[in-house]
View 1 (cartoon, rainbow, N blue to C red):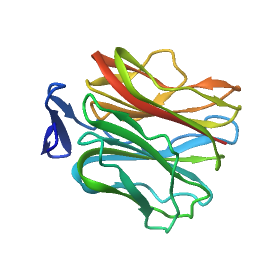
View 2 (cartoon, one colour):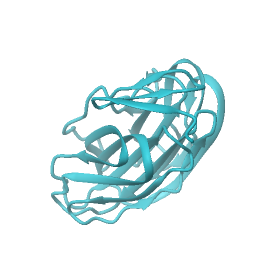
View 3 (spheres, one colour):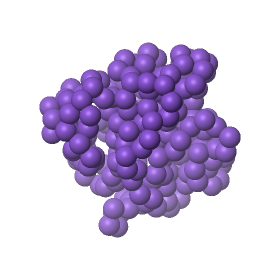
Length: 236
């Protein structure tokens, strides 16, 4: 039996149980974006939430050769996970091997990706091993194709600031972090180089196009101190 009872209201989901009650409401989705210097650049993103055994994110038609990064937050049961990712252009997705688990709230996060994608993918579908409450983000970038490194943080102690694990990155690379807490995330921490995507109450994905080599990982503010988990991946 799941330790968290879940109720879906529209496109929002709520987590009920030992961690309290939290709504998981998407703020919106991001449209086409401008390049951020160098060859690596953000193009677009989309997100969806739900309570089901799969979820689909709608995008504008992708550009040939882009990198698609998929962040998945699972707020139901740590025994459930992503079983695969597909899209309507036939691209091949693989796990970035940074699945993070937070047993305190029976939640987890994952990052998947597809490199050198075909043009005109408009729907990315994530298949799950069970019926869960989820948040899914799909992000398109140009100028990167290879995963260089990845790291995850499991069962982190309660804090009011999520500091996703850092990775070492070269310049003009793309770093993507996902964070998932037992409390509402209020946004990306001020002063960081990361851009946050629409927050889904207890989870978020943020990215950075690096302008120098160094160590990178997103940070988010949390409404109250709470345990968390998350992961970070760098692409070049």
